[in-house]
Structure formats: structure tokens, C-alpha cells
Length: 518
Image 1 (cartoon, rainbow, N blue to C red):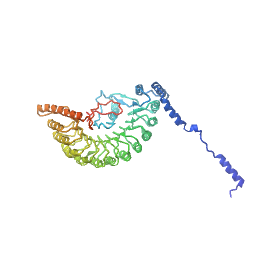
Image 2: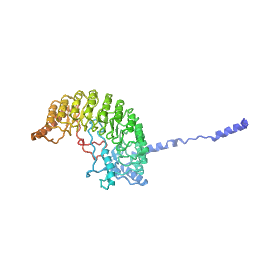
Image 3: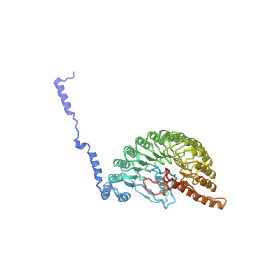
Image 4: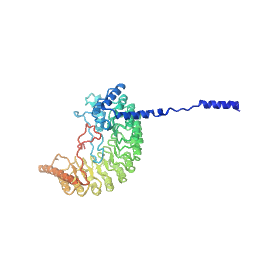
């Protein structure tokens, strides 16, 4: 019993129904934001450069910030607003040209086919920034920096530029982005497809929201192919956000130099990269990766990822034990990895026993850099037979490896038997007249080597005539390489690229390092 008559019950039901209402907005209002945004993009095509600069200045005034002089200078150099401009560089650049305090990073060459030859110049600049802060506190003068801090309001004001002009390269390196500003700016870069190459290096204050927006950008962008996120610690939430993005990202080049990856961050990153099918170049230099757990993670990556073409592990602590793990994993690389950079990794001649076992089985590896490791003549001798058997290796880096004339003779024997090697670097080794003689004789037989990097200054000899012999042999070797290069034209062999210029102050989208810094 409810205590209500049948008529009362019906009356209550009708009342309840009348009180429950569902309403929808008019059709024209449901997607108004989308229509308005797209209309803005369409209108941007008809804007002139003067209109864009004026709009940016008005936006700065609205947000109570001064226009960025660096941004204005670059806007004035744009010739066509409907095509992607080459570069939008807002980075903090340090002028070290007159300073004795200058951080220079020794890197090694990469092969010409790589569209990103070397890591970004952010490395030396960021190290300098960290050191400079301590020097300021001690009262020393340091060179001025060029570039402004991008706070939230400064980031918001940049939208007038980003919605009107797209760029190949946007550099936010060292701009002290904070969480809200980074999140807002990266959302703009995604929405307007502003960049194909983005550098957010040296921005350790991006925070959780900033990294979340970067992760969303990487997952959703249809044009971004390269990301530089160097010189800042890869904390847990950053590693997780980046790894989540890499599961579906279209990135082909990723720079993570000097990001404290050792340990859990590397484990998180590798977990995603094992399933990634887009990334082709990965740069992990200067992360203090050890020869145990870290090397096991790198090996795990090489076992399960078959799309990676370039792996840079230079300036870490892989050691002989880590090299063993990596060599075991390389046997799984049938048609994948082409470039492996292991320079300055505390590797000795003992590690060559692992490398000699896998080299004959590698069919895709074209560039191997073992420079700045203490291999000595013994290590070169251990690699002799495997290098003679291998038919894929085109470039071999052995700079500063403790080689003497004995090792040079071994290399000459390898050259005499190799039909494909195109470049060999043996700079900063004690190769005297005897070793140069052996190399020059080998080049009379070898027809593939088109570049042999040797120290051009004469080494100290017991007799003066040997010094003159060195000079003659260096010239002869250069002529023989030039003859091979000339003969290679019109064949499948491609001449090795010349040394790129020193780029300590470059703002190019694809910066390189001088080959002299080895």
C-alpha cells in the first residue's frame, strides 16, 4: 500500500515527467570554436608581414610584455608568409668568442645519408649556462647572453606569430620556460602545426603540465619529425610522458643528450621504443650510461627494434662489459642499424673480442665509431680478420685510440683486402713515417677509400729526413684518396662529405660540429 489513489499516482507521474527536461544548443553553436579557429587560419593566408608584426606588438601590449627583439628581427627577414620559414630561434645564445671559459663538446662525424648529421649545438651552450650561474655567484664577469626568458605572458603573445607563420625549425632552447607557459606554447605549436623540428633543450622548469603538452604534441602532430630535449634531467613524469608519446609518435629523430637517463628513465624509454616503428635516429650521448643495467636496456632495444638506423652512445661509460651486451644484441639486427657511435666509452682492447665475433654477421652496419677508447694496437689486431670479412662497413672511426705504427700497418692490411670501405679516421694517434708508408702502399691497391683522416702536423722523429718523409707521404695519401674519389664518380660509391664548419654559434635547423673536435 502506498497511501495514494490510482488517480493521484498518475498525477504524480505526469508531474515528474514534466519536470525532467533535456535541451540541446542550436546547431550553429555546437562547433563554433572549431569554425572560428579555422576561419582564423584561413584569414592568415591573406595577412602581410606588416600585419603580423603589428598584431604581435598589439598582443604584447595586451599581455603587458615587451616584444621580443629577436623574434621581430627574424620576422622581418621572412620573404613569404604562406610557405614555411626556415627558422624561428628564441633560444638563449651565449657569446663565448672572447671568453676563456668555454665548454666545447667533442663529437664525431656521422655518415652523409643521415639527415640529422650531429646533435644540436645546445650541448656546449647549456653546459656553459650551468657553469655561468655558479661563476656569477663568485663575482666573475661572463659574456652576455642573447635571448629573453619566456614567461607565461610572453608565450601567450607569440600566438599571433605562430597562427600566421609556420617554420621548419623552432628553438626554445634555454628560454627558462615555466609550467604554464610551456604548456600554452606547446599547445599552440600543435594546433597551428608550427614546426617540423622543435628544440626545447635546457628548460628544466617545464613541469608536469609542460611535459604533458609535449607528449600530446608528439602524439598528434602530423609534421613534427625531430625533437631535441637535451641538457635537462629526465624526471619520472617526463620519462613517462615522453614514453607514452613514443608509442604512436611520427618522430624520426630524437636527441636526449645529457638528460640523466641512467636507470629508471632509460628503462621507461626503452619499454616504449621497443614497440616504436617510426624513430630512425636516437642520440643518447652524455647520460652516464653504465656497463650493466643500462647496457642491458640498450641491448634489449636493439633486439626488439628493427627500424632504428642511427644510435649514438658516445661519452658514456659502457665499458667492455656493456659492449658485450650490445654485441650480443647486434646479431639480431639483420637489416636495421646502420650507424653506431661508441666513442669515449671506457672500452679497451678486451672488448674487441666481442666485436670481432659479431662484425662478420652484420649486413647493414655502415658507420662504426670507436674513437677515444683505449684500444691500442692489440685491439686493432683483434678486429683485423672480422673487418676483412665484413662487407657493409663504409666508415670506421679510430681517432685517439692509442694506435702506433704497428696498428697502422694492421689497418693497411685491412685496407688492402677491403673493397668497400670509404672513410677511415686515425687522427690523434702516434702514426709516424713507417705507418704512413704502409697506408700509402695499401692505397695503391685499395680503390674504395676516398677519405683517410690523419693529423696534418708532423710528428717528432729521430731523424730529420723522416720528418720530410712524413710530409711527402701525407701528400701522397691525399692524392691517392682524391684519385679514388674521382674514380668513384659515376659509380655507386659516393664521396665522403667535407668537414663541416665550426658551428659554435649556428642557428641552423640541422647544426653540426667541427670534425677537429674529436
